[in-house]
Image (cartoon, rainbow, N blue to C red; front, side, top):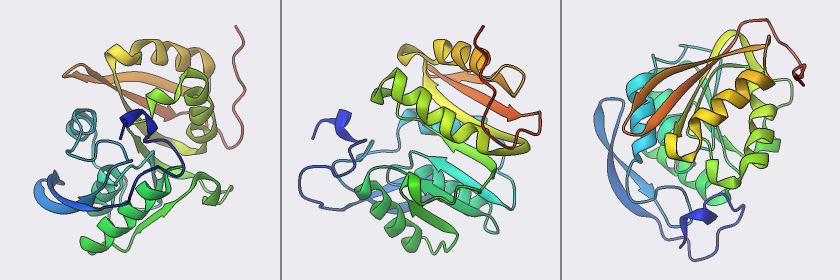
Length: 214
């Protein structure tokens, strides 16, 4: 199945889970993946770069994996912060089911895999980690970030990994202009052709952003 359809709500093709051994939180674990989701045959390079660049997630509160796929980021956050609640969000119902299956396999009861509209609107996050779905297109991606980044708690960080050849630098410039005065955007790391971008809510933002038009 073509990878560009991993962001479909209902992927075509049979749902045939298969096992895969991957490194998560410093150890090898066995998970299940399937066609129709992002990177079903391996832990993708971008996610590996993200893991190598970010500090441990906050120990409590609500954490978000935006675009969870089969769950590597959400599972890692849950393993590192067992007292936090991890929201694994994806439009792809197959991805959500795989994430639930993998959380159960690893004995994690702090992972909630849901569609975007199933996250309570009032919820705010002590941390966001994401390998965002760049291939959905610039307009859709910007809308996705507008919907979720302003939901960071004051002083909390989002960490995004984006391939340089897929527009990481232009995305950083767009965020710097879009969220000027509200969210602080910095480049935290560069590795293997990927940028890791840090987004901090430094202003106590508690509602919709005041978009910079300049």
